[in-house]
Image (tube, rainbow, N blue to C red; front, side, top):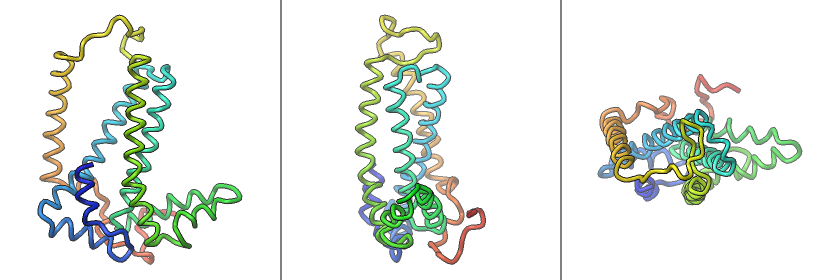
Length: 226
């Protein structure tokens, strides 16, 4: 969130200036490269932890707690939407064609699909109004996500969490401190060291090479298929 605030301070949601504004932030602003790397790699780590949490829930049959599980599914879907919107904003070539392919899927909705796509684009193709809308949504949706996360934790405390034995945890719970706190802190420190290493030494390891080129409506990346 903090890195996103700094990025938004310099970002211009326009097909003419988006790519250059991100490039300028990375090259010219003090610690700009660091904050952009923190933002992009932080998003990758966020999804890594979400998938670990999801697979753990499947293994421990946490889906039996229906309300907690459904809210978790909403958190996953909303997180994907936020990540997709953020991926479009740098306005590289992969951003353009990724947005074109994904948003065009809505045209498959019967009767009003095509109209919905044009409404989302703000015209007959992706343009500056599209970027403005994506930027607003990318900024606003994390606050909605925070409400779902709070609800997820609330349902978890009400229903209890899954465990390897598959038994009801009520009446068998332990204090979080100090044992679980120390265990979690150890994992946090290890993950933070790996995260910091990636941010400083390999900040582009998860980037698509096509996104280093500015968006071009006449040049489709080779791995984008109709």
